[in-house]
Image 1: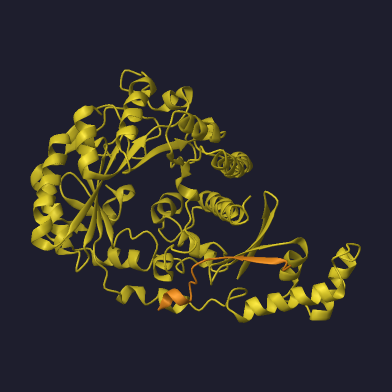
Image 2: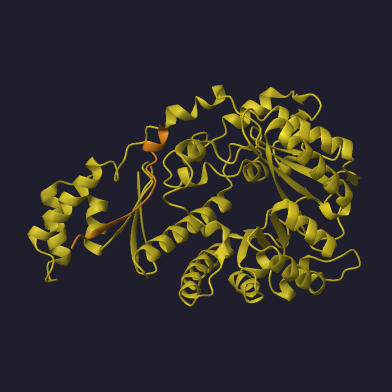
Length: 458
Length: 17
């Protein structure tokens, strides 16, 4: 399966099933499109008709290019057949281990963000804080079900996790005490809205947290429109200085400034550039997840605007990189030589099998976006996964699970997409969140274009 | 000069191993 597109002056050819990327000129671009369904002579004739007026397009040149295309096909780098589908259905038999937990240490929040997928942190339930005993049992559950894996991930999430900060610190201390006993290495992440960040939080997080995710939507008027406190006051002025101090203190440790864009700011690149201009260099900006009828929901009319914005972002990032003031955008981070293997690309994010969310009362869900969806309760941290039917449903929810994706060039980049987004959009984890799918494909096209530009010194 | 530049990538088929 081959995908061809033109972007920022580059002609790009992706070979889905080998992972190969080719940058080609106009003649090769057309030859590659014609090659599967036309004879050699038909292609030569068509190329000479179209490009014969150019001095470097002769019969010999076109023949040489055809030979190159055939050589790439023979080398398994072009028109590579899809032989992976049978592997996808072996996944139910694969013995997976639990690698990561998302600990919902606080189902409460000190902000009242209008678009919050977690209904202001309470997940459509009651306000709750995780007791240390539940957190300790969650750590024990993770260790017990992690097999021989050394690195274990724990994300402190909410709601706002800093509203249960003492328990966070107790859980970290307990996990650290178990590392030498079980030969494990915990990597912690903290996701915060910033309101309660102070010097003590910064010092502890910089010592113990491998990653910190800080929520900021960009420009002050954009951020304050939806991220208000319960008195209706915007939070930008309160949190930005704290985040700047936090990010600066991180040193070489990871952090992300993570924003959400909505129908209100379809010019979201201006928010990303604002983050960069504030001095932040590790950035992530996500489309809002909400019901289609919400006033801030992205619409069909927004889509071409968003596509253009993603292209603008890629071009500007290349420009700033040349000027020595580059920044990272999460979805444009591609490591073409050391990226995920085919098993990872088929199996996807790991939700429901390798990754689970833990509620304040110890119930397990496939991920944070399924919390309090009763039919997706997996079990609890004391008894483990008792709902094997749901777990197996997630094991088989992969890049080959959706008939709509069968002939899609992007399926080994998106792994079939986010089950939670599919569930909320279609009622099935095997559905397709069509809007998210189209945005994803545009992001991948932009990310690959940046790699081509960098390879060509552009 | 070749009209095709292949960017170095991880071969997904080889990653099966």
